[in-house]
Image 1 (cartoon, rainbow, N blue to C red):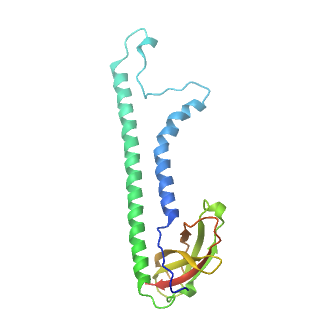
Image 2 (tube, rainbow, N blue to C red):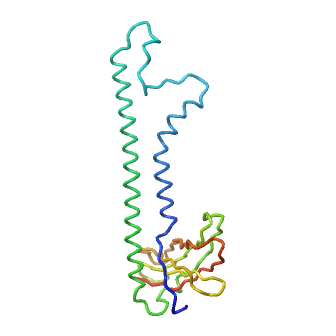
Image 3 (cartoon, rainbow, N blue to C red):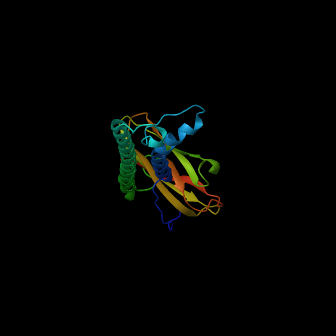
Length: 205
């Protein structure tokens, strides 16, 4: 490893993307529900709005108007609740990601050499067609010890000249003996570059 390299740590992009997709799916649920009626050829009865008095010879029953108003309020409440849940979930995941990243980086900070867990880790490349053009590699971690352990792994990305141009830190916590974990390391460098991922450090903690 080059002694002049300066690791650049990134939060795992796959996690952020998953959270964004989850929030988008929740927020789109009510829209999909309201548009589904247009897919049926028969008549559809809804209570989202009070019936128009022009369609009746008498007045609209007050009970029906109350039910319709209650339905609208309930739908609005469900939508607001879904948005709040999605926001809370995203915040929770982001906070957990920040906590684990800090733990992994702290575990690697004072490691001498490549660490004590290099033999428990190997990398598998991912095609850019599956990653939206990002450089990515699956970090395969297997706990070969007889005790539960957490792992921190630094993945360096090198160019065709062998220079380290980017780094990512991933890991897993409380992996049981014989257990396996497969976090993903990313590089956000130009997709047109040819980069090779290598395990720079791996440490149990």
